[in-house]
Image 1: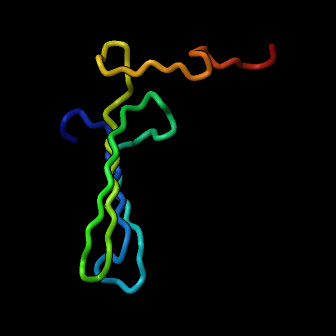
Image 2: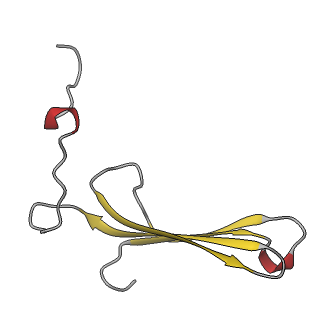
Length: 89
């Protein structure tokens, strides 16, 4: 993978190969944590109009986690920016 990417996911959907029924085709290289806010993930989607119909393309590129030494770090103020409480208080 180029440019320091740690994971790539590509999803194609529509009438692939001119089939009668639409389907989805997914390809993955590496892993992409989509459920964490600290992940630096680029996402793009595009549509292509063909003679058989529309084919959708979605791409996710995982560049790594936001850390203290990167200049494009996002400071979270969610829940008062406190660590989550564990157990009973």
